[in-house]
Image (cartoon, rainbow, N blue to C red; front, side, top):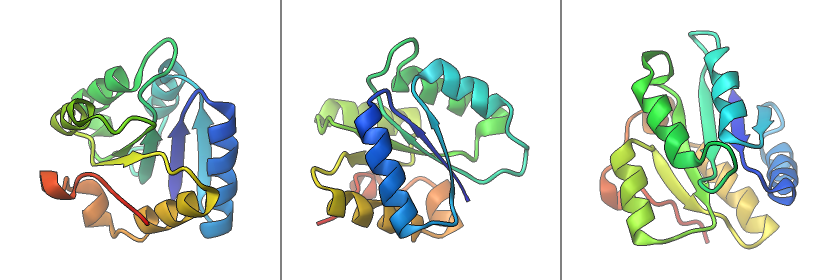
Length: 144
């Protein structure tokens, strides 16, 4: 499984990497720190690559909204599962990313243990759950 994290906060990247290693050590993690680097990396994917992308929204050079639009407009990337991973929980932002075609929305957990549970929860989804978009009421993932 190929996991991508695009986030410009180095502390968040480090915590995500550690949490992923503790919950699903077989996963391959690719970290990019801005949207331009993400899109360059995604364009080099093999056609059959299974990718789960955790995408922050507020980044330099190209933000998460712009990346999400590009991903959904590219036929080669149509099966990339995009999980918005943001500090925001603003309803307008959630609605906008849902309409743009993101698969799920997660507000960044405020503890390492919740981060691990959240990653574990997402990675427990089967392929259909990751590729097909949920109904709007199931779009936001809350793990307690």
